[in-house]
Length: 413
Ligand code: ADP
Image (tube, rainbow, N blue to C red; front, side, top):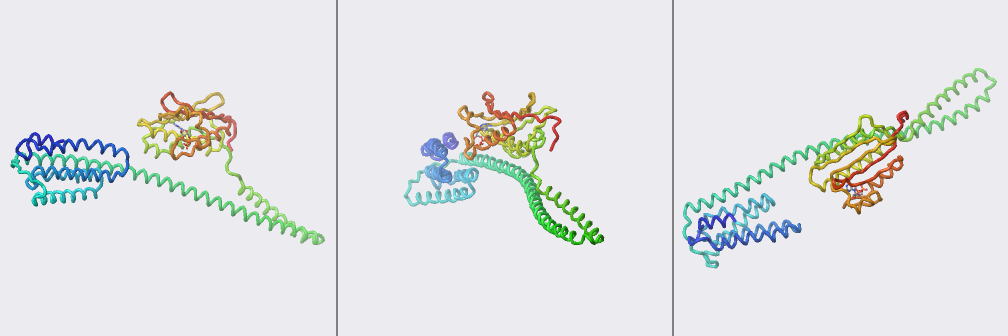
């Protein structure tokens, strides 16, 4: 369109008013945006689409140059530079090379065919230095703007990459720490099993030895000295058996049972665990608990699992809306219960979905399992509480957990 206007003002080549071919091409070029847009929205063969646009542009420029005199239009050749430049900008560096080679080939072919008389070569009046200079200045400006856009896009993508790398390194460090802890726990477990096995075998051997000792004692009852010595041996046996029994008891101790858990602390830990995801998705989390919040009695990982499920669902929902994206984890105390509300500013739960969210395998996500909420509901039910879901009047979804507060004097396990 710029060239259209320019040709109109400066009478680029013919000396007889605006070039009709350039005018038709300008209008055609503009109209072509419609099918380009329609195809672009299908997302099919994006590379082929980009190459078609590139070829069409180069062919149109070549036809324009042909109508402006072919070899006599050599002064306008810089117009070709726009195509490789925007190809490099929005497409790829190889497309940029292809566009350059194709432009060169098309122009040489045009001039050769006009020279051989296969194509008409319009007689043009010399444009004059001012017209030529103005045209080339226009191209220099277009190319300058495109280059600026290109370098800005490059700078931004570099910045994004640096930030992402930093996040990745942090995530990697955390993963390594976790991995080390898992390995340590696995080693301890194996060690515990080995100790239990060895101790068990020792106990068997000592039991047999103790039996033989009893028999021997009966036979030497008439020899007081030997009997006294055997008494000492028996005491030592008892000592050894006591040690073995203790070791076995410790090794076979079941995993830690229910404990008094601080809900605010657990909520903050869960937010910490998801910190990377929240930062990446521009989600702000507000954790708000009153100062004296009663503890609850449960296996710590159970509460962690439930809160993790709720905030992860909120995170997924928030991805569907524009920022600001917020999650609120709020604690309330009501009689002998604690209430924890996890709400978000996402799209909310559609009315037909709401009654089904706690059903096992019910999911509306492409890669969802539909198990998060049903497992959470099971855990909360087992702890003597309940979990409910509601919409916050068009301002996102809210999940409410009620759990019995642990009595203050209850001793921790
Ligand atoms: P899934 O693995 O699919 O997330 P869930 O049991 O966690 O399974 O959730 C079941 C469904 O409940 C989800 O697929 C989603 O439709 C809905 N849901 C859960 N949390 C939210 C929320 N915060 N906002 C909107 N919809 C939600």
